[in-house]
Length: 365
Image: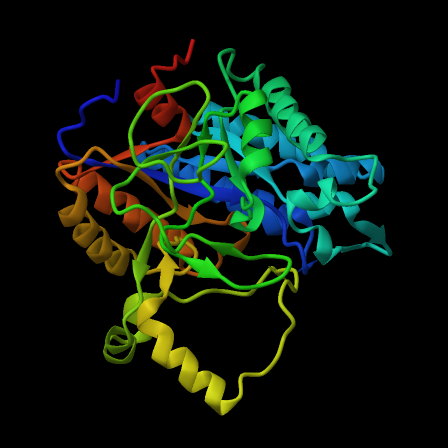
């Protein structure tokens, strides 16, 4: 039974805990571990929880090349996250498994961006099943010493690439995963190998996932289904973009620590393409992201979302990446958490384990 929460929106602050898949300009300490330390200190100071989706395939590949410093610090920091009262769950960027370490740099194979790639090739070392099994087993084994009752019960696909979901859903379920947080509300991204289409998101959050359907609107707790905790978006508005100064929508970022993998061929937009993009702008969506969105601006958007869902008991997530936290990002996160604490009559901050306990009657013991 879903617990009553006085018509508050249940919001999961989530971070994709990962390195850059294109190029990392600095060592992992600078790119990932130091920013994460600052984030968990802010969360601890505010008494707030969050979920870190850990990209475990990076650990596997570092160990393969005998680079053991990164896996050790990765494991230790995940333990610290748990000890600070936050949550760690499964994130998979499978193209790590086809990456090559050469002369101090990682070279990535963009074609293996989706986990589905490993069931469509002659690669006999990795399969969809073996990759998910490794990730779940790794988290359960390494985090049990920090929290005896820890369970890996939630998943987020790298690049939100969950489609086609049928076999992946079955594999996740067989490995004990009960929640997914890979669907980006109403969003669509065209691209090969990375692309997704969530343009038909149900109006009523949340929904279940079955082997046949990615979005089942009827609420029914069934051990054969997964519960979706979507990444929330807001619809773009060209007038807002023109009329609201950029510094009211975003904050100042610092020096970039890396670059993403090139998943779509880079081409300069011709004039006609730019016009087409602007014409379609009002029909596109953007994620509620802590990487770049000003906390006041996000708060205004959340208040509008609250008006739409205040009579329902819904769960959704905000997204961020420690690797992208530079400049004013830390201060912005601190202010966002203060905003949530000041508005506890409307919003309840939860992590994925909290949601599992709420929705499925799970236990932390």
